[in-house]
Length: 378
Image (tube, rainbow, N blue to C red):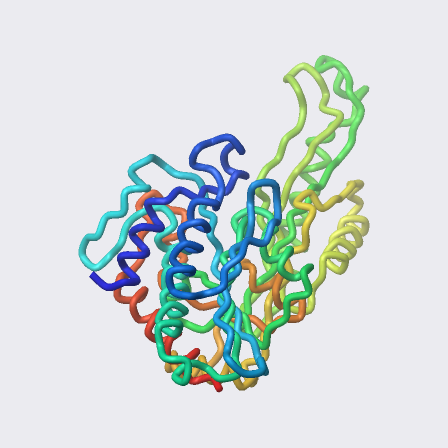
């Protein structure tokens, strides 16, 4: 069994469920077990490692391979350590079958964690003269990607800078230079309560929301289809939840709907809110609108002409940039001034599933590619 596969099996067996999906005192909650194990292995490899406190009891893991000479550039390897919740405890028992490693987080993103960490260990094991002479390589095991991206946001706030960040996500070993952003909005209509036997005396908030839905599914959907990006396609909106009323014999005085709006490069939170409010106002819909997620999830668009990106694309044998619909820490890091791409083993179709798995061959290939890419740096 290869070293990276041995490491991946160990990581899958260590629970790191994001506390947003469980409770803080749940024994399966938090990234600390994974971070502590990687820190021990880093110290055994002679690497500098430290914890960067982010939230109570939760810290990013920062590991550095620093060159002997002056640092002229920095490359960041940035997978996340947290996973979504478990379907059952069997997901903590890694199973190797038919070239696949099954288990929670194997695809999203402990496969990337293992590949990136093993690549760093491989370089650290080389004689000093065989390592990059002026490039510092930093591994940042980030917390909370599956919820509020607190880990990447804290790294940006710390003024960390790099010439390139490679964010670990399942991309089937493709280099991703663009992805959509994400805004969660709450739309609320207000009415006037009345007895169900005399509805004409009230004002039905649910009926008003039905008009809002008609506008969103009609005029607004058509508007979004005209917003196209050469790599990402169209902007989208999904109506995720709706709640209104208390019981059948009361005219509801309040209705709230929550929507997921995927944004394209060039769109901002404020521009989307202005656009929605203006359209609904023109269609006679009286609503209040607020951001209920509370943190911006910006889209990603990195210039593929950057030399480091070109080098990575060449090693991946990829002749054009690619994009994905999902959001990642790369959007946060890019907004913070760090050119970022997304890369890693696995397919997003397997992420978060009850039988989550990652291709062993892809995990090993990702490790080899990263060793070559990092080893080629001056």
